[in-house]
Image 1 (cartoon, rainbow, N blue to C red):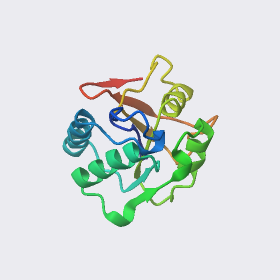
Image 2 (image 1 turned 90 degrees about the vertical axis):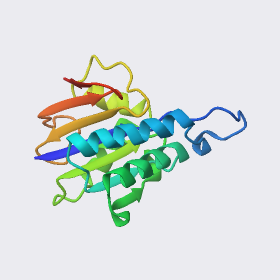
Image 3 (image 1 turned 90 degrees about the horizontal axis):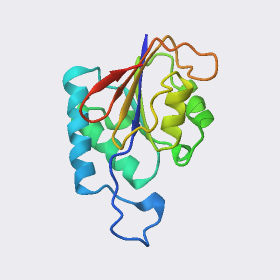
Image 4 (image 1 turned 180 degrees about the vertical axis):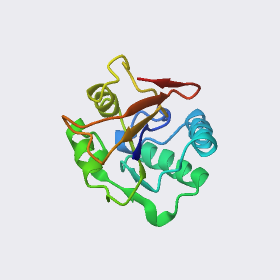
Length: 164
């Protein structure tokens, strides 16, 4: 069985209106949320063996915080520029490329893609994955495309786990 975490970046700063979207950093509450949610995974769930992140500053920062909290090795951390402003099909493609030997992985990226993936996999009542929200999928293999099997979907909204 495979465990896939899909994580929306933590809350970003809008302090400087001239900052390009890809360059927006996390704000202080986003940094705190990333540490808090990372600790939730550390204490109650298996750690991902592999982490991939969008190259947007806020997603990278969120994933680096999670990596440090979870003790993920630096060589198991990967920047994936195509996860920035990606389609759900691109997410499917990234997941399908994961090494079959891995049993757990995490991808850090953005809305609306993460909510679209969640809805397509069966979490239809999930209208919006909140910042620093985590989807935990249990899968027989690294296929989340059309017709794939998903054993379970859980969603953590920074305070509570929900099952779909």
